Image 1 (cartoon, rainbow, N blue to C red):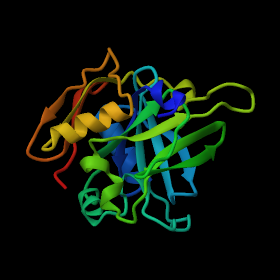
Image 2 (image 1 turned 90 degrees about the vertical axis):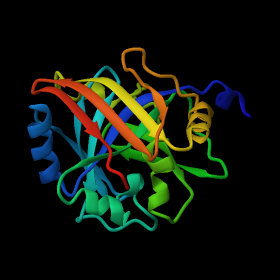
Image 3 (image 1 turned 120 degrees about the horizontal axis):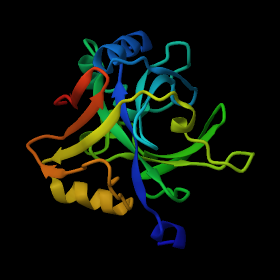
Image 4 (image 1 turned 180 degrees about the horizontal axis):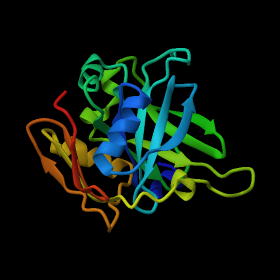
Length: 231
């Protein structure tokens, strides 16, 4: 293990809500949280685009959909957006399907993941993506094990993050729980990325009969609960 990997720690960066399209995402966000989502942008390498919602310091919600104006990528899109089960689940309404952990150090690939570089506007980042042609496998351990992101230093010498420029929403993440039938595998995966829960967000890791992500929020509309679908 390299010195950088040994020092690696990770925290919640954002929660991923898969959507049929961004019109559905915008309507759902306002109806669910009582606030409007902010514009995001396109991801040409993945054929997707998004809307964003600021939460606690350093955490946000990403509402993401396939962008029909972009060419399809060579492999499966991130977060299982090409998985037929995910596509069916989001036809009626957006669904919490995955999450992303923010790494403190630059990422290194391994036998299971490949590191890819992305850039949009002022933002530059790395993502460690599964080495797989299987859309279902893009949601690691059913979405309970996060993809890992590292936000890179800009040309100005800063490390821009979406929450620094997104408007305040007055929505706060209170808890985020993970349930999985293979608890040792989930805990081992979280240890491998150096995951350290945010003290302000309860993050229980629990046994369950199926992979389930559950998030609790305080919002202008009142308390909000999101639970991932059984896929």
